[in-house]
Amino acid sequence: MKQANYLNNQFIIAMPNLTDPIFSHTVTYLCQHNKEGALGIVINRPTGMKLDEIFKQMDIQVTSLAATEAIVFAGGPVQQDRGFVLHTPAGNWNASMVISDNICLTTSRDVLEAIAVDQGPEQYLVALGYAGWGEGQLEKEIRENAWLNTPYEKQVLFDVPINQRWSAAADHIGIDINKLTAPAGHS
Image (cartoon, rainbow, N blue to C red; front, side, top):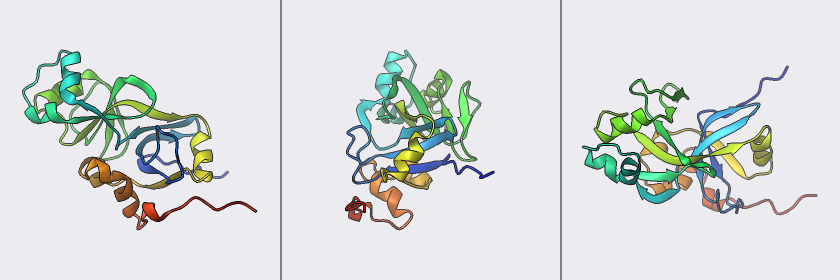
């Protein structure tokens, strides 16, 4: 029996020919990928909202000025009213999924409360919503040249300026994504 090649803890980078306005020029960090489908968080689509607005909506007391200024991302088109925190491991949060030795995804309020008072994870990215694919859907889109999958790179996830993440994720494997073109045709 052939072993499935799942893409957990990897990036998928939108190819230049992917024109869907939700995913054009995006980098998505895959948190879960298995035979049932995939779940990822888009890491380069700011909402225009700062974390301070989330703290106010959730009535969370804040002492960390840096946390109030953190950018909130549009993680994808599914459950856009729900928060997801990608972070380096730290703490014992109520609803966390360990993705790798270095990254967790948490959806519980307690991680936001800790971030608000500088007691949270060292590095984090807060997103509203996620990107989801049904069984076989992501694999089909990859075969159709919509996505380039690459290894995850911590610097791209947390440190690279947002507007450079799309090209930086591809640069990590030696590809200039801006020079890629769609196939000319099929014979």
